Image (cartoon, rainbow, N blue to C red; front, side):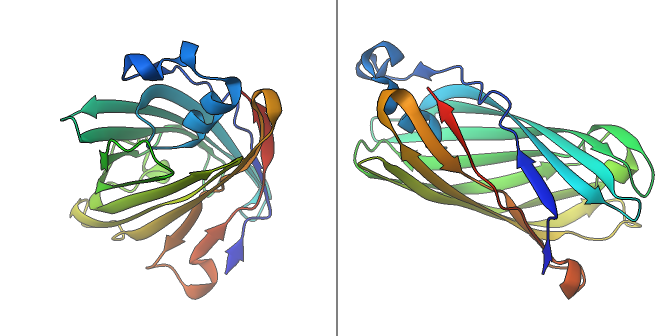
Length: 229
């Protein structure tokens, strides 16, 4: 297992533009702690934009710095009284110093979750995930079209918001000269909410590339932080 030497989950903003679905769920009617819990739930039926910056030191033989800025809108569509569809596009902007320096747009991922309109303590959603070869440079993209299943479960009880987001994709088209893709992403969700909207959080994005050698197969960042709604 290859552990990430140093990772900063900078959450540069957790910039959340919240628009609730029902009149009974408007931000004005929520306390700061309730609003924080809504923001911590990736399948809460609110529309928002998150900006997250990940910095990896010690990248490559020259110990360069890899920077991965991700824009993550969450758009909710009410399908019926009992069901909603959530779209989570991830738009990466990458600086990669090795094996050659490259900056630009990476491959865009789109996750779709069909989720029941539950107001209880347990939330879940399932659907497909798609990866589009949108990268502006070969070194920061795969040149492959990929897709696979995606799922999320979230448990909300007392001060805790706990969950897990998983997706697995396989390449099915694209540049035949490039290596095929079989990759999984695991994102645990761990939040402890304090009074007045303050909270402690850890939500590292773990990745497994099943076609890589065993020593380079896993990327496991470890980190945490705090925030306020």
